[in-house]
Length: 345
Image 1 (cartoon, rainbow, N blue to C red):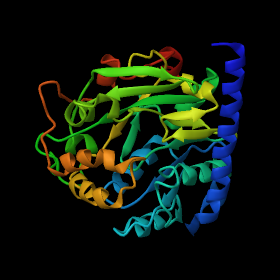
Image 2: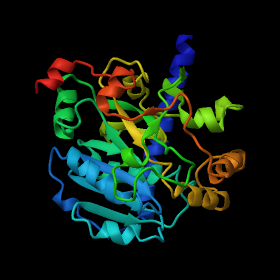
Image 3: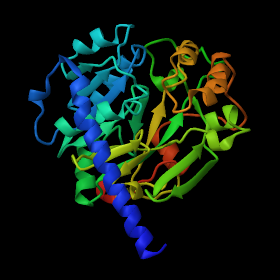
Image 4: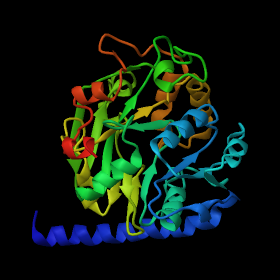
């Protein structure tokens, strides 16, 4: 690449980042506070930021998981839920809640709203930006909570941690679960695909484009380029100068995208256990065929929602039963990095 072209691309990316930051500033005006407990945030607190709609089935497990990991406060935007999610969240002592009735798709699939909260409350904090159906795990998460993890990342000068999104699914057809409501996610949806994965870097942002897993295998076998992107950068030491570009798959400035190379990366990384395929997925897929809020080109993905709503069986010969974080390390799906420093903390 010529120096002139590199300079031009860098200039365009700076302006893109400024545009996204400005969108986040403007988005604050559409968020209506329901319960604001942000005055209790302390220096050094790890924060979780989420935008959601109708996730009551996920919320108890979501909050319990991240509380045990050491999240101090949850900053949540509710996009006009009508299933009681907003009432449930407003009653939680560590949740600050805002309500917004605007278009999820027009807000860059909620990124503008999340960006507003990250800018206002996240600067200088380690922030976990996740969906309500995503549970982050990482090596030794059961004995090393997030404050230990981020202290280690600070010590080694790593400003964030990447993760592969691992779709979990039941033994039987979609719309069923292997354990009753209230059981752990990995008991209700105990299976996952360990691969294969396809990864490449995309210029000029240098963002990773990782595809693979069960949705790729079952729903996009004939159109692999349309398969979901399954790499994320969910845990970042936040600065108001940063912005997520495409969900939490990519960021600006571009150097942050270099933090994660996907499965096989030896650096410390995690996995987002994805509970998308809990029994309510069938009803949600029917709804999305009408709402059309989750893809930039909803018509192109209508076949996907119809296929999910049909309730197929996803388990196949390549499926593995989830056994814990060590299994994912052994499979190369998570890296341990400078493990001795982290383990001996």
